[in-house]
Image (tube, rainbow over all chains, first blue to last red):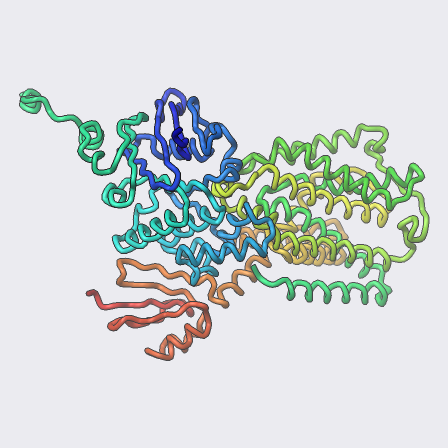
Length: 251
Length: 385
């Protein structure tokens, strides 16, 4: 018998009015893996994320997590079930310190404040923010804000971590630090699904890549196969020109 | 998370001072001011739970105050003990909060505030027409005396009771700030989407806060009815009372432990004490002054009196130090250091910085610390590599 993947997305569809943001997306995330979700701008990556995390209710389709149907489950319940996320545009608790914000995440599984603070301290040491724990969230650099988002999500002790463009806007040095943190998160046993725009970042670390374009899954496989796949190349770069097409237009 | 000790000490000092006043002061005018101050501080704290910590601005808070006041009047006029009014009023207020909060607490922006005004208007209209609630005439409570009747010929015992209520409200808030509820409310106020992403059930958490907020206001209502022995809609549930409560919370500083007490102090000293001297001829100067203060706070210090103090303390501790790097060439530091230190060079600055905050600053070769325009602003300038 084959083990069910940790996350199985089937026919995920999301319509905003007449716009089909997602039009039947299918993919799996294996337990313990790092799966990359990529696609050109407007492909529906963030919408897919929102539907899995419960921030948006999918119009149709199924999201199975740990053998359980979670499509349409309220946002906060999904977090309780073990899915945590970060935001593409960082969403900090502006007037909380780094430690307080992380403690807020830890309180999900540790209702006693003392336990939650102790756990938050551990998480901050893990992500490398321990020396900034008394800073206000709004006073951090972008790289540290993103790190804080990861800390807050990890503090909820998730089984599956959804990372939405954690590398965007980081300098190469900061990116390297983030990749190193990702490796440690994976080593700790957390499964990761990450949306990433920067392909080069994803290539060396993702075991599995899912490419979506125009709301549909167009590729699922290894990262090296993805860049050779004709459909993926077409989605990113457009279709090859017919011979004489440009000349025809020029006339 | 800061320690609760200074707050407990301050509370102890206020209670001791209040007890001295209750026992030693003879002037009925002064005791009336102290009683009013404490009562408004409790009402402000009640409002602060849902509007300050949770961030849902209520403009109908007087209806919960009214629940307590009317529970008291109903108990006494029906021959029951006024002590029974405390649980009865609290239950009624909590029920009212849950019923009205369930559909409205998820409303964003000003819509919750508008809903609270609508609900309060409905409750007031209902009270004004319901025979069993005394219609527009209200209730006069029959005169009695002693602890069983919760009525006293002197004002001293009322001040003691108000002190007990105030201490209970402050202790409950100290505990709330250091609990899951407090963290969750602050998270929801800051960012409801991010709060949901860490498993916070907005409606449930806010309903809990709203119910406790209502209970606090109801307890104050019982005490008020027993004090004035006369209640009617304008003195308990009218929109004007709701706005007074909200303004106390805003003036003092929303979402802070001592904000409501500070706001109540400003309100009572100005609105009541000034009214005694100036407002008597119906000129309403007190309202002009109070209104001007509110305008000033709204324009200059939107976090209120206590919010401003907290901010200043935080700056001093260096917790709000911001380091913004631009291309790794320049960094600006905001630290509360005396201007003199800034002009020293090299090692003394590093030592001064390290001594004041939990972070260290190591200047790279070729970098210099330059004092900024304001005292406490520094710029780190580095030679471009």
